[in-house]
Amino acid sequence: MGETYDLLVIGGGINGVGIARDAAGRGLSVCLCEQDDLAAHTSSASTKLIHGGLRYLE
Image 1 (cartoon, rainbow, N blue to C red):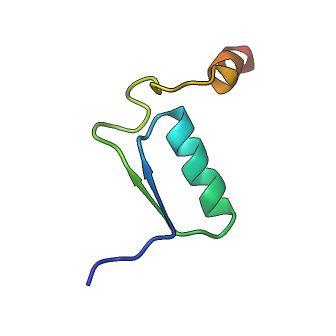
Image 2 (tube, helix red, strand yellow):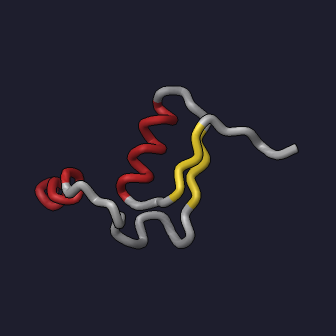
Image 3 (cartoon, rainbow, N blue to C red):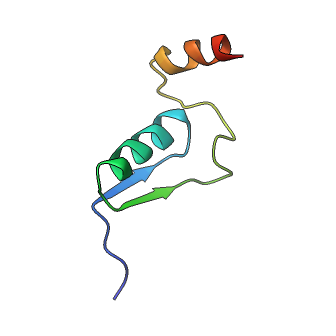
């Protein structure tokens, strides 16, 4: 039988990785699925909250 996870996150953009990281930090077992490399593309459903703030960290 396969592995069992508490949460499946589809998409390794900034939103998906952020959700997966937060859930793992709360003790959930997380499976993150991404078609390409992590953070290879922009999240399609961006709220612009995280994207807009990253440039100011440089």
